[in-house]
Length: 334
Image (tube, rainbow, N blue to C red; front, side, top):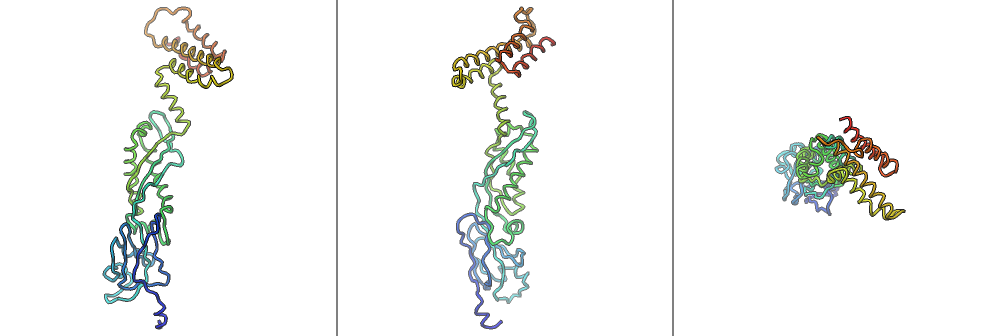
């Protein structure tokens, strides 16, 4: 190499990364035709780490501090380059800086419901949502498994991979869980701890430390939630008569707005009261241990006739009729 070529060469004597804003996890120092001066200074700030890479292989890793680059502080690179103890020439190496700051407020969620067996409701489909936080803990693993030789690797680049890991682990954990849905909803803190324990080793494989994980909600699809609400309402009503009267009362505001006005209200209320009375009679008769001979008006055929009249008059639905009829027949057949 001639003296002219030597003069044209440009050497780096200070390596550092001034992070411009948030969102960058890995940044490759722009070397181009530059060479690193032997004895150059490497500045690694708090919440940063630096990695020297030789021909695609991770060599030396530096934590926060001011480092002088020589054969003593670069033992792996010295070995890979076969430098002797008197080596003092400029050298080539790829240098990557990594941000180890905590990444807070990352969102996750199951894009599709997870199907599982529930002891209370049978087969149910659940959806879950929450937040998590993490930080880069092992730049060597992260470089090897995730970022590679890209000039810049951002939080957004990593988010899709991490979110897929979260959802996959969440789905398998929920699918294999024997915890009923109602207990899950009441113990989100316990579920969060379980999920964090299951995912921490998965994150660690990629050089990422899971700092916190929170399950904020577990919900049923809309149609299943409506069925659950109905079941809860029936339980709160205590019996069918009260429930049907409750339904009739709930219809007052709507009926008043419909054609027919309060006449419609009276019809709805009358249907609810009649249905409640008939079904209450049927259920009371079926549960009685001993009773005096039934009066003519309490005979099963009379109650069935009443039910048929209500059905023909459009005051009860076919489903209501079938339910009440089954109760009466059960009382007859024992």
